[in-house]
Structures are given as structure tokens and as C-alpha cells.
Image (cartoon, one colour):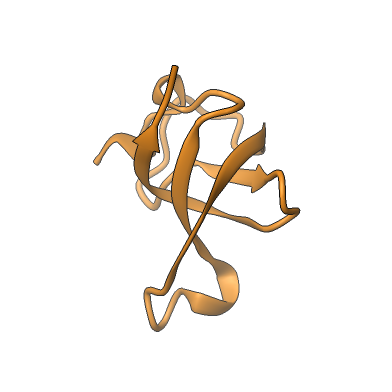
Length: 66
């Protein structure tokens, strides 16, 4: 799973994230990364990001990048 390593996440790439409210259901939200909120190089549940839409969640899949 590429979403657990901070080095794989860059501003401007399209990702699927799971929002805090959707963690139980596993529902994914797609969007473009605006900010990376996790400072550590890796996180077992996914790197926390803010999308351009303002949604905050943990990256589950990287859909496209530069």
C-alpha cells in the first residue's frame, strides 16, 4: 500500500482517502492533495492529508501523480 509512506505522497496528486467519519464503513473519498499533515516518514494507517476540497483523511490509494 503506497499510502503509508510519506515519500510517495506529493501535493497535486490524485488520491483516495478515508475520512474519520467513514473509518468504520471504509467509504473512500477521491480528491487532489493540497497539504500533507503527517510529519513522520510512514504511518501504518496511511498518511494524513488535506484535499483541495478541504476534506481531511488518511491516504488509502494513489490514483495518479506527476
